[in-house]
Length: 418
Image (cartoon, rainbow, N blue to C red):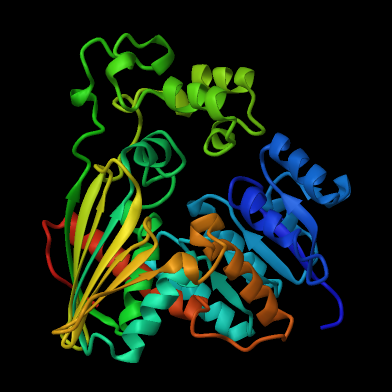
């Protein structure tokens, strides 16, 4: 292709604008943003300033943009979870290729339908499982494929969501309520289901799961707590104090994330108003959240290997860890530390420092940028489909596993056959 791909962006929030658009702007010879849509006029105005697109190319919603004849080669769908299915379906029927934020949809039927439409119409759809694109997980996959641990038979993985991230995203934030988004194990952890299947090269045969919303409930509120942190006498001793986390931290560091989720283009005045009136100023014990704060999942793979996965909010620091046990050796992998410990049975252990493999650890360990570059390169005909590419055909299984895990959890840990 001799011209830049044209791109329309549906959803101009943290992922659509602050992540993917900023990555695309670094590659103007390959891709050019020509249209954008968002229901928030302030974010849409920010998108205009950032990209230089005219007002006539800005739409008050993704649905309004999709009423127009096809505007671009590619559409980025970065809207809330419950919007993905209808918007992606309409975009596919207009023959857009898609970069689609996960989850594809909160239901198995809709995931399969979008996959089938994409295949039938010959459209490329990459689902944003960005962990696959990190140097960290790619090195783990390389080691497993090399046979260094022999046949993989046992895997233990943990996602440490971290106490403040749980409060920000899954108690106060956009993913707090299943009816507004999707279940926690799908919205947060289809990443993990995808990466575990990809690393092992296996399909999942059966699933069981336990978990609950145990802590972030009104009966656990401290004595004297109020509906909002700005008015709370218990704030000094509460680790979830929104004033300390958003306003005081902004004053101290000037960092934009996650403050820019609370208030677009944040200032002290905007943050104070948002804490007074918006969802992020609420006490974590007095919200409308209903997603779990801890959950464990057990998988049996087609070769008989077993996988245990834990998602928990109750950690001081975030990050993912992974232990891979095989017939010839073991790997212990710590994404936060960026280290992979290779333990060949009967030999001296080796530690691989992932920081020596890349200098890009921006956005999900560098995964955001690599995803965009690989997808744009594929659409431009500059590369073939790589083993990394999370096409919708590959992505659906991770969603089915996550949804089976939730079905099991809701039925007392019942084993669900896939």
